[in-house]
Image (cartoon, rainbow, N blue to C red; front, top):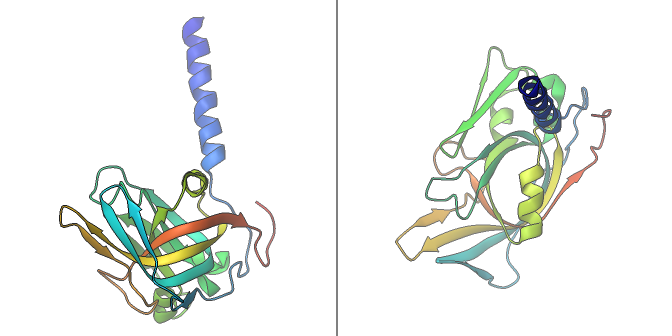
Length: 203
């Protein structure tokens, strides 16, 4: 009897975890229309995190759809940026487009593939990106741990460079037009929240 109860409990726990982590769907339509916003710094800003010196390069904010997330625990950047989000905006936030785009992440990279292009290739490249997120405080870290694929998020902070006492260096891209190695954004995130989409249905 106890074995059956334990098995039932494991099944229920697995079902709950799947339900909690399931991708969010809104139906066809662009749900994050605006381009990311990047502005020069009005004054220099620097942050300290354990043995790392973090230097702000530009103000940054965006609203975007979560195309995927990848958690990191053991690589060189995990102590700073434990989560990467692959994010899409414009038509790369539209489920009618995304159902034709396969997304994966690994090794701090974001990969996509298509059998046929639902929109031009360059639009895929310039309207989606992999972003390494450094939580500025525990509130942001908590919210980041709860983010689900498909949600629309708004974040605000700084594109940064990082220098560690052990010679570790990590620097953000400063453009949305690049691809490949070095094209990811490294963001000191001061505010992160899930928002309702501009259009579409429910979850």
